[in-house]
Image (cartoon, rainbow, N blue to C red):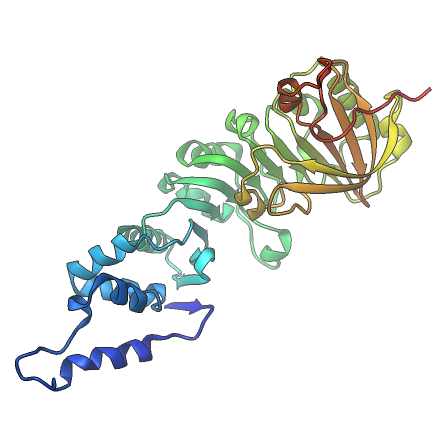
Amino acid sequence: MVYKESGEESELPHILSFYSLRNMSSSSSSRPAPTLDTLPFLPASLIINYLDIDSLYCLADTARVFKEFIEDLKIRTDGYNISIRKGGYEMSLPAVNYTHYYSERDTDYLIDSMLQDYKDFMSLLPRNIDFLRVDPNLNGHFHRFDQECTVLSIGGHPIEYYGQKMENCSSKDLDVLLNSVNFRRGLALNGPKPLITDNQKIFDIDWLQIRNATWITSEFLKKLKNKIVFLMDTDALTEEQINQYLKDLKSGSIDKQNLQVIGFSRGTLWNKEQVLSGLNSVKAVDQIYKVADFDKRIQTELFLPKVSSDGDIKIEESFDFTRDDGVKVSVEFGRRTVRIYIWNQNQEKKVTKKRGHPEDINGPAAKKSC
């Protein structure tokens, strides 16, 4: 079964009424009636811009001249979002509010169809895959996924799998998928069961999100070299372990030159005093943190909290301290989440005041308390 949805009422009937011109008699027997393929570029492009993706694809399939014409228009659609799980997949172009669905019980045929549909769409609208989500229940077929994407997401929120039987997805299974797919910026290990791996890619990717992170240890945290990290269900990590992580971050005993934001969430509240013990932190309010090298595709998962289209995060209240190298760090407590912000240290080194002192791009450095 294949069907699509579009955000606007189709204009195809109006377009077809124009096509009827080819069947109308001209006022002059020596002048042929105009058709779409004989129109000048501008009016033809205006007509084609009214067509939805399915209509464009059907039109391109009728004649090579139409396919080349559509390609020359360079229609702005941004990238593809693809999500596949047992029983079906969806392929969308969010920028133009288009989604294509397909249902199939046979997994091999399902993957075949997804690959062929993507190939067909790419022949007309060649775009990157911004977001690729793969069901962990497809672990026996992970070797068939060799795409390149911006963000790779494995599994989803547990509620999405309520009542379903889940296959065991081992570390070996995960390695097959992680080594096959070229995910350039982000990785989300969502579950619903814990997806445990020590594949080197997870430590080096820019954005990392892990649900069911009950298996995360202090030693694991020391190996992270990511820019943005969000770890959920970290009930196994204690306040004392987070406090030690912050102290190591302060002293520079762990290499976190890339780190911008790291968050930990769990089912119970955090004890602020225990997390901040010995850091000489001071309270700060109403700060704006700027995410360096912001890419809107980071919003396809929960890598960051609420962020503006320009990469700004409002920190209403935090506890700030200064690292031994002079870089400010902010610790923000939510209901069950603690987030740590490192204030764009690379930019601070490049900008100086007239007297030669480093200027804090994202606000004043934290003052030490008495």
